Figure 1 (tube, rainbow, N blue to C red):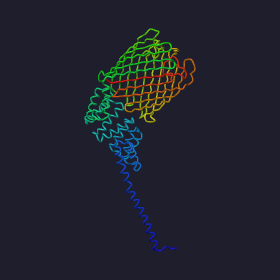
Figure 2: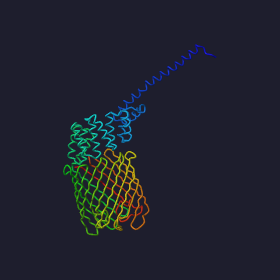
Figure 3: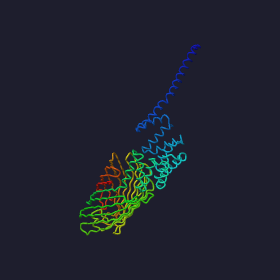
Figure 4: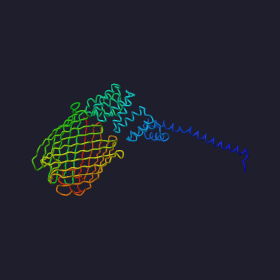
Length: 516
């Protein structure tokens, strides 16, 4: 049936009314949409300012979900990521920010700082330079550039930049503490103390300033330390030993150390003792280099043969080419007296060792080393070790570890002399620190192989070790620690033989250090 004109008019009116209602509702929704976002951003800022970073992160994430280009939310999340050690994610957020606003100096300075934390010091320096072209007096950019250069290992250039920046801002605490840190790293604690004291006067509540001032004072004052160690193995080799040291400053670039100690060892055949004393100096050579040199004497008193008193010597050079890299090479001459059986042998060892420690990124550490030893009985030994650890959770690192050593000649019945001894294992290290208490636990599981002279290699054996250290510190460098370990590794001792997987080597020690 055909509709009347009046019906068509009423239908059109209803459709228009529905359409108008929908348009009004949509407009109202659009008008109200920014209000939750506008409320969330101040709430996130307030949480950030009062230190509730978990709540701030959640609020900023909600803002970013509603507006993916919100600069404030991106900026604060990038900062929070960097504080949490999530540097890759932080740098990705800064890259987005720089595309949105490539000229904002605050974003550029923060970005450069995170680049330095990530070890990309050249890129960090370039970004700081870009800021300083436009704002040559900006203190945080001056400080950041000098710090990035110091972390790259160029301490002399960093010192020059800190001093020039202080000419512009003589009372800036960040610049004062930065120069003090650089001088401290260069091995000049006397000069570092001057600037650390000035920084403490300007910013007495700054934690970084307080910690640095304590560390510098600790480096200048005398220090005593004592170690008590004991060990035993399933081949009935046991020893207990104690060593004490006194270290003090002899000048702005020189420290001296005196040490004395004793060891008493037993085995199935008898016992023996050794006593030693000596002194050494530690000199800062500049450019991050440190020289160590020492002389001493050790009295070896076995139970059934005449005693002897050989001289001891040490010489070493340490380098720090970058903030997260250290290299050292050293020479030592010592008696071979680790067990009672070895005390009965008139043996001395001349050894040269090399070590390298690098942290290629946050939570990663790479270490390696090696060397050779020449024995007074014309034997020789080589050794090499390497380890890589990566962080998988807070305080926990895991990674592979490998070690190999070997001797040129067999010495059956005298000391452990495999033609090749190798270990490869998976290792885990956990570290926890709270309220000056510290806990370190490490363990490994792998395979070891012993190859003796003139015989086929022995079957692979399961190798394992467990270690634990509990420490309590106070002040800048005062600490007491209890350490212990147990392993079945044949290379843990220089006993005359290595048994099957039933072999065990156990250690227990107490460490004490106190600044005077």
